[in-house]
Amino acid sequence: MSRLRLGVNIDHVATVRNARGGAHPDPVRAAIVAAEAGADGITAHLREDRRHIGDGDIERLMAATPLPLNLEMAATEEMLGIALRHRPHAACIVPERREERTTEGGLDAAGQFATLAPIVARLGEAGIRVSLFIEPSARQVEAALRLGAPVVELHTGAYAHAEGEAEAAELRRIADAAALAARNGIEPHAGHGLTYDNVAPIAAIPQLAELNIGHFLIGEAIFAGLDPAIREMRARMDAAR
Ligand code: PXP
Image (cartoon, rainbow, N blue to C red; front, side):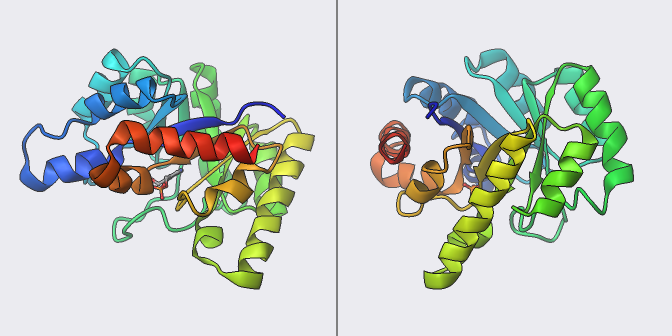
């Protein structure tokens, strides 16, 4: 089984910074620590309301981070323009509603085909690796395939919130969607709500190439430090592999 990459989402370093409006703590410093701790990529979500990551952060992350940047973005003209200007390694298209606390569900790649098709195409033409953040379902994977997306990120939020039988069922959905994507030449990633306690069964899904983890790691960093928190997550992912 190939090594599972870890993308560290540093959005919530910016959340804490923005609570006081200054420059500390700096998400760029977090990205540098993440690189030293064995992360394979940095993920940042530039939201429409700029509640955590700001435009200047994207510029600084691109300039100062030794790792590839995965820019999470809504499927809007504004975000497309920003992505095309900065040309990050990857762009993950996520659904976004202003009122939500976080990205609560997957992108409806099937229902929003007409909106997504030109955005996926323009990002791809610019050499940006496009990922679609979708629910782990055959319908959504098939839509991603029709859209020509090289990557899908499977939303693990429902799995993270489920218990018992429901958790096992969610895990099967993710495994089935990952297998379907891989069979069709799409690289499957996964993320949302992953913690030390629930990461192992996801990391054990052989087709998955990358996990993106944020909120738990930044929270754990308060107690353990960011470097040890990332190392511990990495160790658990590797052990499950
Ligand atoms: N992947 C995507 C596409 C996301 O939108 C998020 C949350 O911003 C994550 C991964 C990370 O989720 P969490 O912060 O719950 O680990």
